[in-house]
Amino acid sequence: MLGMVLGVLFVGSVSANKPTGHYEKIGILLKVLNYVENNYVEEVNIKELTYGAIKGMLGTLDPHTNFLSPELFKEMKVETTGEFGGLGIEVTIKDGVLTIIAPIEGTPAFKAGLKSNDKIIKIEEEFTDKMNLIEAVSKMRGKKGVPITLTVVREGLEEPKPFRIVRDIIKIKSVKYELLDADYGYIRVVNFQERTAKDIKRTLLRLDQDSKRRQEKLKRAAVGLKGLVLDLRNNPGGLLDQSVQAADLFLKKGAIVSTIGRNKENKDIEYAHQSGTWRDTPIVVLVNGSSASASEIVAGALQDHHRALIVGTKTFGKGSVQQVIELSDQSGLKLTVAKYYTPNGRSIQGEGLEPDIVIEQIDPEVLKGEDKKRKGKQALWREVSLPGHLENEGVEKPNEEDTLMNRDEKYKFDYQLQQAYGYLRSYAVFKNIDLPRKN
Image (cartoon, rainbow, N blue to C red; front, side, top):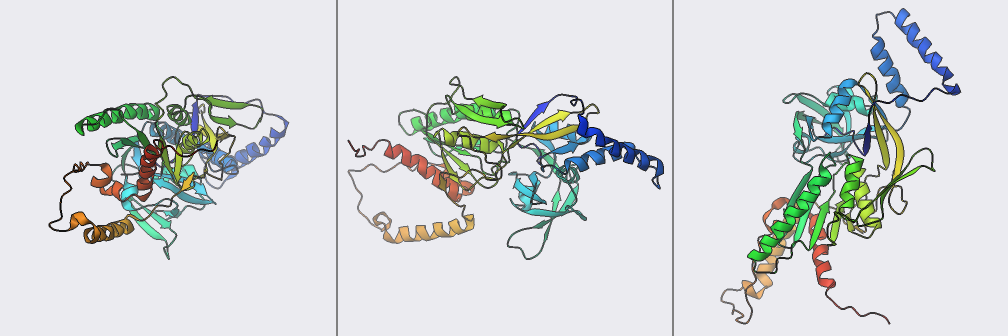
């Protein structure tokens, strides 16, 4: 996803309010257009001139306010359904530079090795410093099978590095899930599309059924999920209403998010509803520096209501809402109309969310090395590893359960996920311990 949809509201065709006095200077623009049309050395396209003037005007505002040509506007609407042509990256303008928020897992950009915070300085042979976000996105879009070269500046590299990537049809599966073991589930939300909240709800039911079947197989009480890891890492956002509905699945009451526009007195608040709320099981939410916008809304709401433990690293800090307006010629205006605030009134715009527990990610290769060391020490020092050791007849051998953390390399060496899993299991232990209390 060459991302533009980071917390948006779609509205139909609208007309602008009647111009006020200070818009009289619009006459200057009309005079320039007329002069260029009649006197420029070559014949000009008035449509292109007009679109160019609009782009220039919006370029003086924030990087998320953009003009979309009819072609781009059509693509944007398709993008929210989860299938489109491109590379599979979310981008933004950061400090004046085209920057990758996150490559989406399984896409050509991800497979090519592009990373969060990579700065794209060239698309093919054209430098990006003069491009706005929409122009950059349009140049990276293309037909399946057509290659493109992006030149990237990355921290730790001595010089810019070119990446040759073959475009493909990007099909984004918004929600992925697994059982971590018989008691604990894992849901990863890649982005927030049109049906993401419904997919999460359906996934919770599936995980619960899978958990009960696994517990029965282990001859234990089939109680279903005892906890959940909700993974919002590298989730660049998406549709605002879907993030609200997703948070509502885990909250019985209270505010989820509020949005405030230019008129500070007009505050729009979205509230949680008790109906349809998932049961009160412990939740750990994983976030990182590429968790943005809609994913920050969910994490912020669960954090403020003390419904979940937020683990990982500080989030991206995209706290604004865009309204997408269809214009009369099927072009579109994506306009920043408000900032959003967490239930406790926090604005994360430019700041991001601080996790409850900061855990930096560790390179999987480092973990693999440590794993080998631990296995070596285990073989040397555990009694059970010694040949001919005596069996303990009074203790039943533990059931070696086939868990996701043991069988899948991708998850086994995901340090942040390991820690989140550990916190969930610890909660189950500590809630059954009678700790001393002061009278």
